[in-house]
Length: 127
Image 1 (cartoon, rainbow, N blue to C red):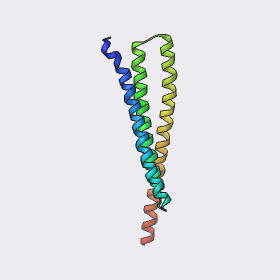
Image 2: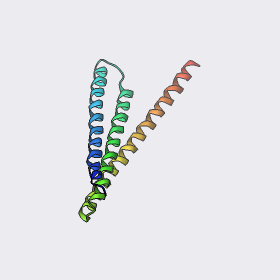
Image 3: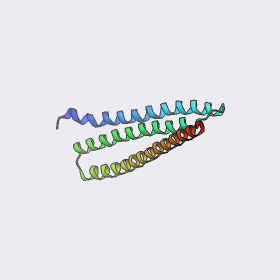
Image 4: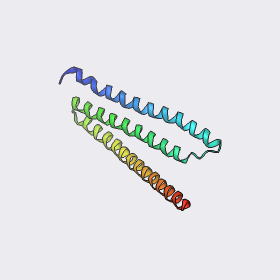
């Protein structure tokens, strides 16, 4: 394989780390703003849920880039040690990614149910 492609894995890993760092930074700023609103007496439950969704998105996306980086790296270093190392990393990151996606789906479903319940109770109150 061309030598220039060997630099692809570290570049993708850096992108993954940048996505994670950006998501954490953005979420930290949003969290502080939400908590300030909460301290002022505002109802912040929905905003906290949206914050979790956003942070979960960035964590999942960053993990996907890191998994891709590990797979590409194993192509250039196909030793048994590297493959075993890759297998462990991919399994751990995949389990984290699946559980994160499951939790986010549960959170979205819960938010939909709350919205439907709020909509039905407001329409009952108007009757």
